[in-house]
Length: 370
Ligand SMILES: *Cc1c(COP(=O)(O)O)cnc(C)c1O
Image 1 (cartoon, rainbow, N blue to C red):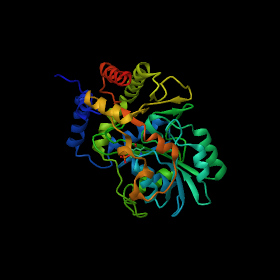
Image 2: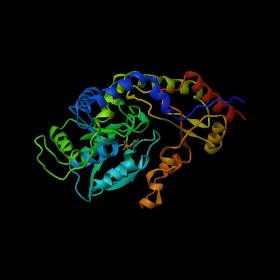
Image 3: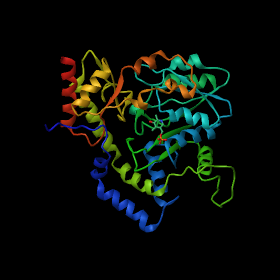
Image 4: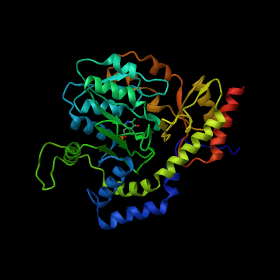
């Protein structure tokens, strides 16, 4: 039997899409022996800042560091409480912890994103910051979040690791707070061939501190100004990212096209809740890092798809942050708990063909019709 296979993500296929360009960029770096803090990095930072529309972009080792350094340089003090959604990668909470803060987990709304009323319920005298997570390539409704922050004198550090290029009311994800964090983990929309991240900010003094902290506290003259980290984005990855960023808008358009196809083929089924379609709401421009659906009889559906060759996953290994007992959270987050009995991700990446998307939809319809 020649069964069709639709992998969840196909790394080799992503490489071969622009193989020659990647090899050329990598060879350039290797021949120059330009590995750390070199021209490709500075070029990438300028291009990224321009793309996001922020004054400053600083390449970092990964997205987690970008969140942590954002919190540290925006003024977090030891013991401050930071509110973030539980429906996120554990990295968001870990970044708060390592920056000296206390992560406080809130619930999510129907859009799977940070829920403003839940944030309000968790405010205390110790609350100092909010970390909205712009999940799945969609920016949260930032109006109520900004309002809460303003009313209570809190600062915002955005986890926009999944949302480079996403917009809310015309404003880019990553530009709503003091700092924004991006991740270039290989399966991210702008993925490099290893780990990578960046922080964006309009605040020059924050940018200066981040530049010191990422490189052992060293200034341009070699003077040590503080205890820093080794949190640099290496130049080889930056060279790859320069290639990728050039084609990025086109990649987003392809993802939006795939979302449109899913929407057309799957809309209106009782047992399936889809993300908003790409043209549903003019306030949002979504980039579809993921296509996260809610499904009745989820486990049976996922098994059926698996047997049909369609690979799916549940984010974070199946659990939001508060459900990992080792982390010691004891909170009641009913909407997140409910969502995690139903949510999973359909394949969403630029190596998918229309035909494959069609096949996935046909299998889902087949499952629910019996
Ligand atoms: C990927 C991701 C991160 C962390 O990124 P790394 O580059 O792997 O450190 C943080 N938050 C969210 C929501 C992510 O998806």
